[in-house]
Image 1 (cartoon, rainbow, N blue to C red):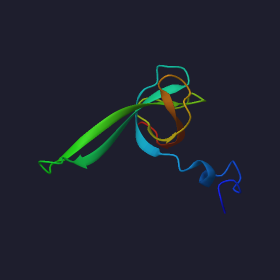
Image 2: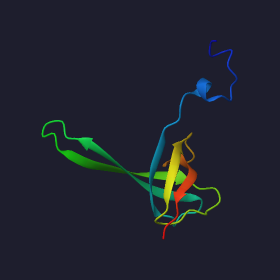
Image 3: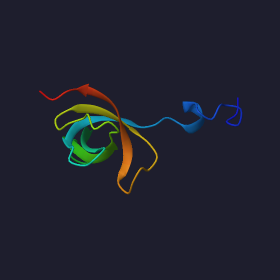
Image 4: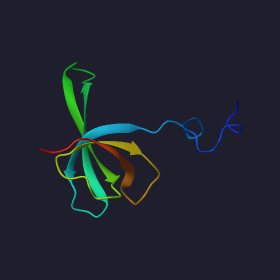
Length: 95
């Protein structure tokens, strides 16, 4: 089956979206949260495990995600100058 034969709405036609999990560090904006995503990688020269982090701006349509929540975000089309991710689900609420 070629790409022209697959339905336009399927994941196979548009490719897999990146999914990340992180902690919300800011919810001050309207319908936007900032998610801190950490990943552990090995230093190429010293072979020590180092922690790398990135802050992703994610779309939260219902404004129900708050600081401290652990969320799963997925890649999406550009929604604004900095927003390229959307909140898929809340994995764990802040205590």
